[in-house]
Length: 183
Image (tube, rainbow, N blue to C red; front, side, top):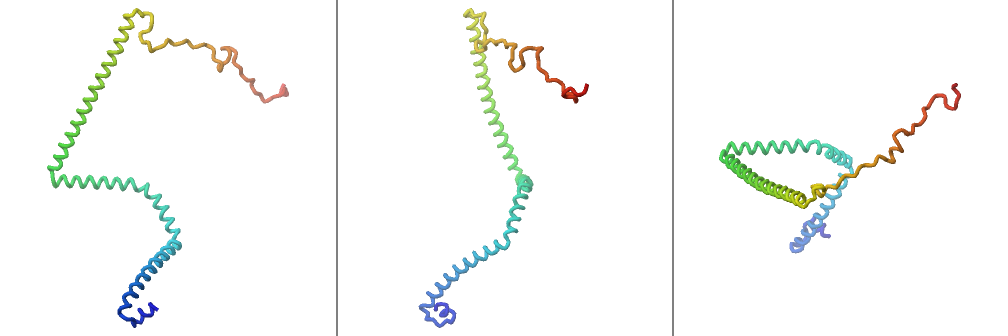
């Protein structure tokens, strides 16, 4: 009855606003469902094209991605060069910052190298003192490095090599006349 009233425009003004609002809400939801049905039908009809596009995309993206990254890098370099041409003080400022950063890293490296050298000297000094202590205690017959153990001589016998040097087993030669029929 509402649709009839709205279509024929014979409704009172008071009720007409309510009916138009309700009809608009109904048409909005109807248009969404129609749109969803349209999208579903489109996917059903063109699904193979979507699948082919996805496969093509999966094949081409890894091939083209490095070229894209290279292009972005060239573009950034060109933009940086253009900025430097416009503002030479910017280049000078960047170079000064770079020199400061290099000097900072160099100082840190020198500090670490100095500490490592001191540790190495302490370690050598400690080893030398241990050797001196061993020599002073009258252990001249023992080895200077107590951590090294005397090597044991290897036995001549190895069970995987056989019992001796002259008794290796070798299988007999095969001949075309097996079973004694050639002679």
